[in-house]
Image (tube, rainbow, N blue to C red; front, side, top):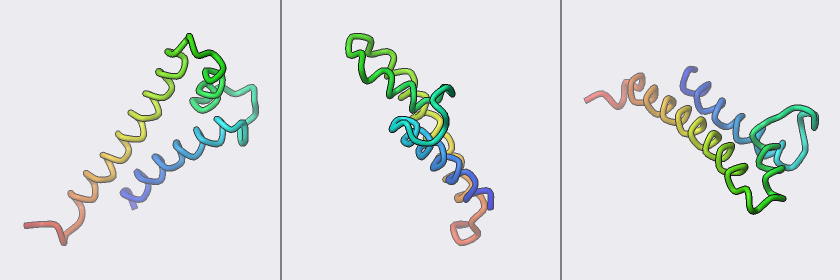
Length: 81
């Protein structure tokens, strides 16, 4: 169950970011990583406006995936040597 939760959280973060990038989902007044990326799309000279939310999404999703992989390795009895 913990493994599914870890991978589910990573998937939910990616889905919410994608939908808010498309301006679908949460209200326009709420600031999300996807909405920040959407706002940065119009300003090419300010590349850092897209860099920081993009890196935050990448790091967060990677951490949750690594947690899920670690839990899989630690809790799966078929992988014991």
